Image (cartoon, rainbow, N blue to C red; front, side, top):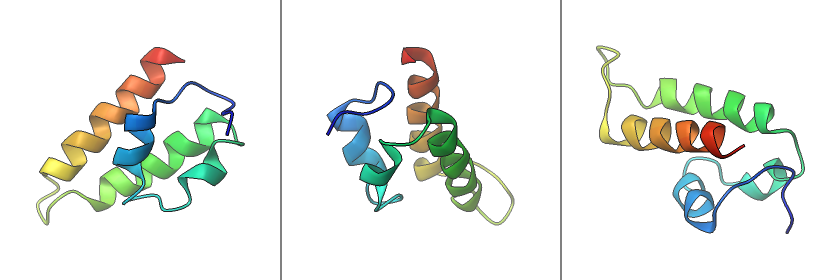
Length: 69
């Protein structure tokens, strides 16, 4: 499926456990996916709002998406 923005297969696979409907976002604007990712990253922080391995990985993908688009 052709996306409206640049996203690699690896990035899609990394996001799929957190955004099961990732394929739906490929037809939307990047800003909609980034907004959803912001919500998920916030939810992956620990009880003290510190980064976790998941939040760090998601933030990395978030920054990659911005850089490549």
